[in-house]
Amino acid sequence: MCRFYPGTETVDMIVKVCGLKERENLESILRCQPDMVGFNFYPLSKRYVSKPWPGLSMQVLAVGVFVNAGMSEILDKKETFQLDYAQLHGDETPETAWSIQQVLPVIKVFRIHPDFDFSIMESYAFCSYFLFDTYTDAYGGSGAKFDWQILNQQEIPVPFLLSGGIGPDDLHNIKSVNHPQFAGVDINSRFETLPGIKDVPKVCSFIQNLKQK
Image 1 (cartoon, rainbow, N blue to C red):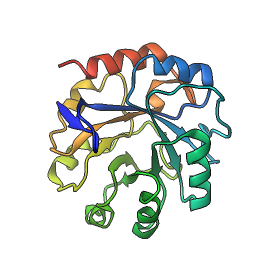
Image 2: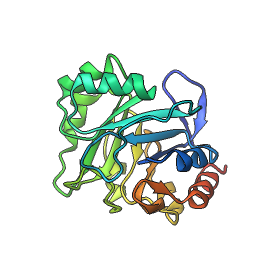
Image 3: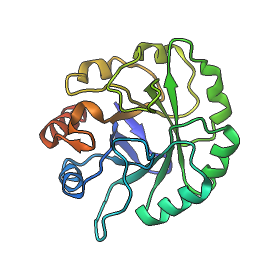
Image 4: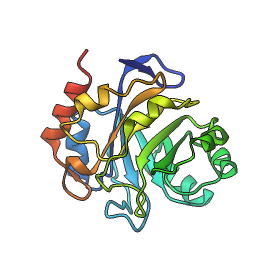
């Protein structure tokens, strides 16, 4: 299952490891060779990151996770953390997302619930990626799944990442999502020993198994 990064060569399915907040753990996760790592800049999150790690060599794509943040905050974090993407996890309007997209590629998050209206996606079709997560008042990290199969029934205008309760035992379920825009997965809480601290062997094994041909 091969996908594309915008403007790059063909790559295997993207794996984004989100919610990292301690340097030593991050450095260990980087050795697992994920494609993206996510830093949570929502102050109410248990995985909130307040300051960068000087001298850290990332060598993967860095994603900043924001919830209804202003442009000045996003620009500050972009420079401080050398971000490659802004993941908008709140109620950002299409106009706000468009403004951010002009300075930093946007991953727009849609929090899926039984009455979710998929038609709103069209207003965000300029974004680089979509990310589908399970609805929660805490804006993610719940460890809960939505019905992934409903995505197979939707016309989704841009490549998307699947999130929401993905765990080490979900390899078969992930491969059952059959959509031409399915680009990869975002893993978080079900790979943790504590909030913001990832279980390195589980992450490494999952990435290796998912990327097997």
